[in-house]
Image 1 (tube, one colour):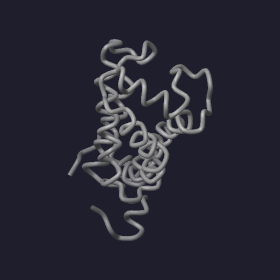
Image 2: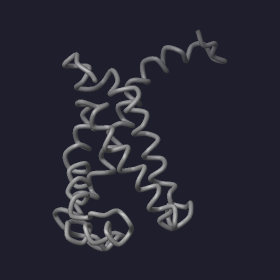
Image 3: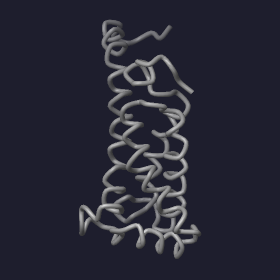
Amino acid sequence: MTTYVIPQLGPVYAALGPWVEALLRVVVALCLMPHGMRTYFGMFPDTGMPVNSMKMLSEVLDKEGFPPGWLWAPVIVVTELILAPMLALGLFTRLVSIPVFILLALSIVAHSKFGWFWNKQGCEYPLVWAAASLYFLVNGGGAISLDRLIGWEF
């Protein structure tokens, strides 16, 4: 039993906890989706990375040491456009968190060459995402998820 400095806040924390967990899950997932939309649909031009097609992503992956790019580019786009929305909904949360975590862990490796700070394309931002996705891999979707609604989790 946790002893709070202000015990009256215990019920507030208990009530808000599941909602904050769901919010974190949705934010992690929704942050991934625009990357897939940029790569697959060419949306959001001039947003940093010059990648705006599967072909370009494939070429970048090959160049950056993640061959074969032709294989990994569609895997990344599927992760960002299909699995990320499933994560947002809390549907098969642990299962979809595996490729999400792997993608983000590899993003840490790829961005480490730029240093730490996210505004310099460093590894800070993917590290935060990876830690959050690891949380859902370990803990599942939580009380406010489709997993809980259907009563079935991995």
